[in-house]
Amino acid sequence: MEATAKIRYLRSTPRKARLVADAVRGKNVSAALGLLEMTMPQKAAADVAKLLKSAVANMQSKHTESAIDVDELRIAEIRVEEGPVLKRFRPCAHGRAARILKHMCHIAVTISN
Image (spheres, one colour):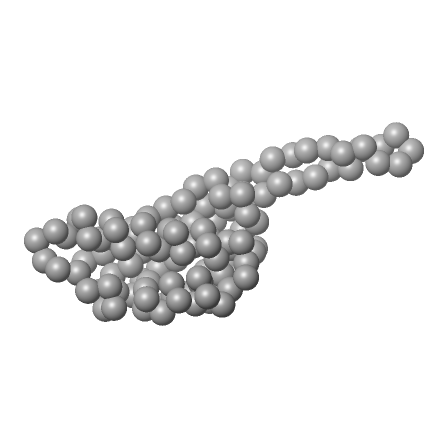
């Protein structure tokens, strides 16, 4: 049994989100949630934890005929892909403009037992 959850257009750079995703890839869901909520200071950690809870809720609503044990679930796959980039400009010296790139990413997680 598998369940997926996705978050799109997350205002975090893919590079920073991949650090969080690599830390929890392949772990049990309960261990990953503990790691994300307690020890990781990154902003993307809270978003990945929320996404993981959503995937568990999807699994429970999808398979209502049998009881789902959260301790047996593991992260089968977690992907971080690049999203669109907001381009902004800021004035700088000598009448020039400095470009500011605000990156976004898409994260998809699949859990299974």
